[in-house]
Image (tube, rainbow, N blue to C red; front, side, top):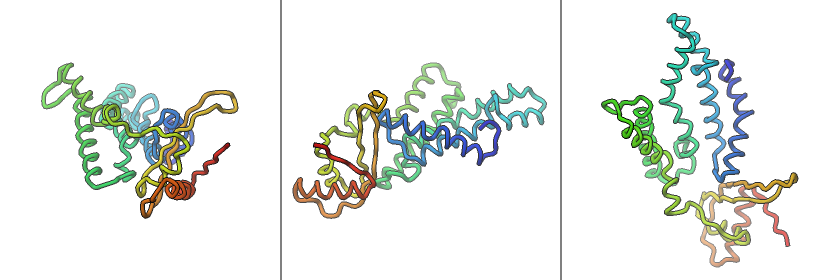
Length: 237
């Protein structure tokens, strides 16, 4: 934020940081919605007002209270730790932004899980859970928070979220996916500089209509759905 107004702060972080986060996520196989990325960087841009060494809000508060500005900023940063986890919820649980919500039950489960995780994270950073927590209780709280925020870290090892298919089956798979399903593609190869790169791309497919009868019909339908999603695929050879 560097002490600039809110609008200017958003323009700065959205221009400088949002593309980097999207690119790094794509390289690591993480599909991050753009609205979640922009909320993420905007949140931390605004947080600069209460965190040193910028912390204009804490310097103003210190001038009013007569306390040391740096000490006031560190105390404000300590209080802000309770909410620093919120932007990560938007990254890992975009359902809170009403994205990729498949049912009301899924939305309710995500909202309750994230609310409980936020309260546990506040207890962890404060060191209190009805009474002052011991080190092993804090460790258990940290594990509970991580499990609630990233259940896929454990579940994907039991039931993988995605399955690997040969590129030749791209259109057949796209033709058989349900309505409004997301197609995730991982592209790997060598760029012009000779570097090996890997990138993940996701497109939202539209309504499928009646289920295709065979692979040929599924491939034809899939080619149409992929094109409607704005993805151009060239088959060589």
